[in-house]
Image 1 (cartoon, rainbow, N blue to C red):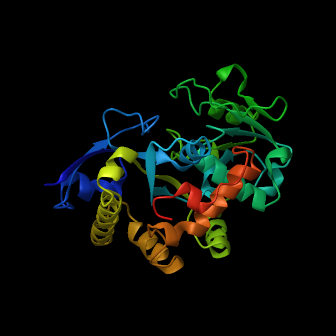
Image 2: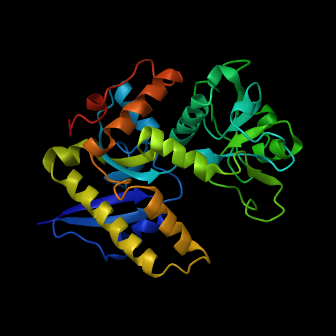
Length: 317
């Protein structure tokens, strides 16, 4: 008899084979629920047994002793962060070092992606104390919420004045740069008025990979502990399904590469610049990245101490 598992994930394209049933398991009946916003607390969600979740939020749960979720070291969202620092087209800033003493907007202080982006800046000498930070909504279509999440500090880390959209403040020059995981509507227009701070962010990201040996992970999969207690095999079975979906999707993307005119060039460059195992799941393959992320959370003051890899993933350790 198979186990039914309802999983909430964002609409990542490589999960298409899994959502369509092209990838399936004889032991695990997986129901994929594509969501626009991550489940707030996977351990308390009545609609799903497993969820995509923020790596940062999960580490905070561990620090607080919340054991309602078993995290699977399958990082469903990975990405370099150098590309995520944007500015206005007429701004003269072209390097991270030039952000010293500047006003930087962030979409959420504790967010995993923003933690990794601050880590990238710190490698270039710009730590939390070297700039002025403002947390707020990216555009007027984004909701007004508490994006400081308890980490505000007067004069250093504050909310955006009057909840104004950060892209407006960036265009006006009040903000010098903004961290964003996803480019806002209109950004890809030729006359958007915005650009990446680093014109050749690809080279910066390649150099970063050569130094650290991984592509940063932002989101992973969390499964309710009660499910794992009854069926410990579910964690690996789910991880294998996610990996297989990505393998099938990659093979199809390489065959049907004409979705954009130069997609084939991008696929070739990725295959040449990164090792084939750059997105391998599992604790051993990701322990260095996990350790570095825990270190960043401590250095940036998000956690009171550095958690070990074993503390974060006791089921696997």
